[in-house]
Length: 115
Image (cartoon, rainbow, N blue to C red; front, side, top):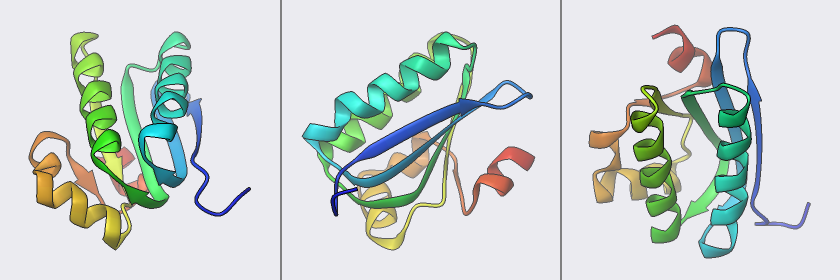
């Protein structure tokens, strides 16, 4: 993988929770990749969405908007969305724009799945 290149991979757990692991830098160029990953887990029945941001090193306003869009689409289908493991630079952006007020944050995937 190229340094900074954005990637997203999703899976639906037996519990029905869709976990999408993202890595790299989420900017305008990565939004479509994230949307495709979220769409694919939804097609498999994952309407409870957990985004694992532990591999994400950067996120700009395009990424923030993509997360808000994913949250809205999840709520429309009767599900929920959580964020796990944001690294300090990404966490700073999340807190700066107040995204942590709209989407619950957890320090790890395990913690998010247990709650």
